[in-house]
Length: 289
Image 1: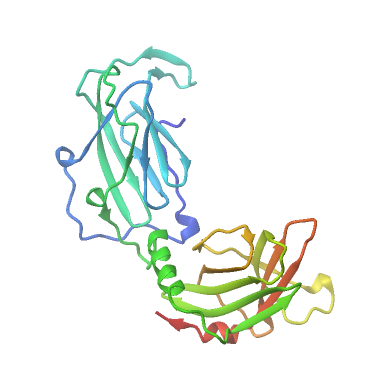
Image 2: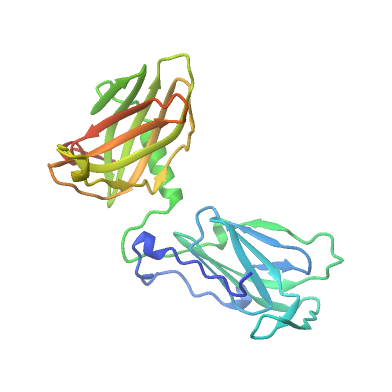
């Protein structure tokens, strides 16, 4: 495990750095305390993906087992430059052993790690970051957190799907509908419904989005650009009857000579595949909300 954990996903989000915020300054004495001891990992659970974790001293070490959980523990012994163990580290009860900083997509939270005796059976093993411990941070560009994207997607899905979808394709007793397209800031939301009119359940291998040429004269001439949603409301791998979902993309454009291709692919052996083409003109008619 690294002594100082730094996970930077800013390049993926297109973030160059933080803008100045109007939040108050933090003082070490005012930070909430987290008790920690030998032999017990402390798990800090974030409501949104963690972008960065800083451990201020070498007395703390940790990692990110998942995108929204930071795992922290006490360093048992000193190590030299080669990583070999040197002398064991001894701690005293109540000792301040470092500051833990957790940065999410829209907040920063800081805690003061305090040593407690390993014989204390009330030592906390996990905490959820609470709203009162979060300080909001602002980015140079409008970036929405996954929590905010989920809220927007829920607002959309609570609306009734239009009886006349923008696009609809049917095959193999399957149906794919593009109910509507919404835009908010630099985000595009696709409201889609999938229908299975057969008695055979559909196990989804993949749902692919790509930008491709409208006219393909030769297979080698086709320039396909795969697109991956940055967020989807409900990850689902099984389609029994009807299923509606929201897929979110960062803003994109493509010329009239190309189309967005949406492919629903079933797991083998059946391998039923259904495709739908979406023209850019239909994306341009997106609603706001």
